[in-house]
Amino acid sequence: MNNTPITSITTAGLLTDKVALITGAGRGIGAAAARLFAREGARVVLAARTETELKAVTEEIRAAGGTAEHVVCDLADPASVRAAVDRCVELYGRLDAAFNNGAAGQRPGPMDQLSEADFDQIGAVNLKGPWLAMNAEVAAIRATAGRGAIVNTSSVGSLMANPQLPVYAATKGALNSLTASAAATYGPEGIRVNAIAPGTTLTEMLQEWDARSPGTIDQLNSLTPLGRAAEPREIAEAAAWLLSDRSSYVTGAVLRVDGGMRA
Image 1 (spheres, rainbow, N blue to C red):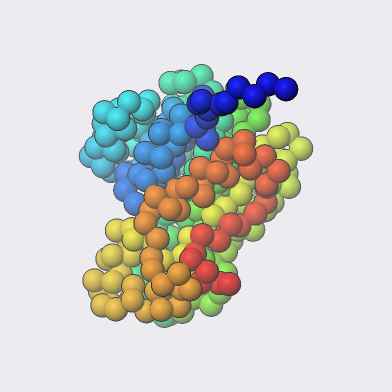
Image 2: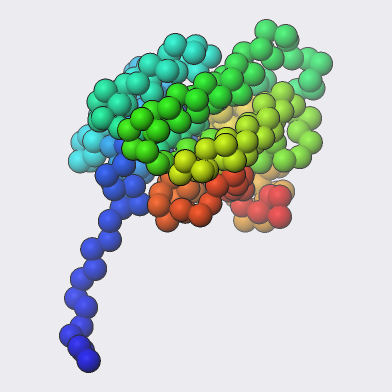
């Protein structure tokens, strides 16, 4: 028997050697994911509408020793979405993983107080955008890496009545269904598709809601067994695991990352 003690163990990052695209990467969960994925060994491409935010996060990742590029992308523009995916392949020759996190929020309030134009915009970004992205991502994975994983950002609000954010929640519910259909369609090719459903998370979107309706965060925390809101990094951790090979038998899932809100 070899009794030589183990003095060190080298563990590769969750996403070592993978090329990952992150949408909505300029701030919030997307920016946290970009930082985390890079720390976990991925070469990342950040996509969002605001170049100043993208540039800041990209430079931060590079300064920490990571590999990152960015591309301006509007999820409501089909050509822009396809161009972002194509850019990943141009830069790194492949696509292994995609985190479709970008979304449009809505002003809180009853559904009859939302304009038709706002309804169309929310649907274009939150449902059509991920549909466009997944189509392009599947094609890129199929043509390059051959196998891969996609994660879509849903919301715990899609799993229950949501009178304050009814259209936002409805688009996320539709995204859950689209995720399941994609998982069933592309699973035989080795392409896994999952979603995460964050609960109360300290993003700019939530902070803006709380500023308009003071006490919102406290009220949501009172409904959460863990008694607090998540940091964006905590949500990104779940996405990283689902995109990694350590979740190799998970597809078609909507993973609640909600502090127990829907327990």
